[in-house]
Length: 86
Image (cartoon, rainbow, N blue to C red; front, side, top):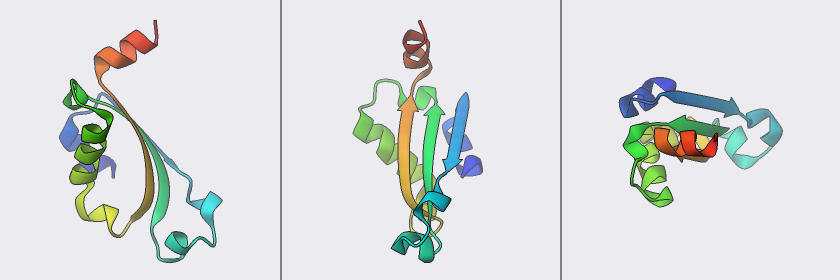
């Protein structure tokens, strides 16, 4: 996941695997994991939340069909990150 997301030139990527919390869930049995993603990249600048999520899904490509069953995304630009921290 990290390797594919590198195409977005992120300054920060945090991936949390929550799959163990979903043991027994249909997606977990089929091999797809549950993840939370926090990513900071200028690629998200000026984009809506929906456009940011679509960009992440497009970047992950076929992983969304196999390795990833559920993905919670928090995608920010550098400017948003800095204004949030002040």
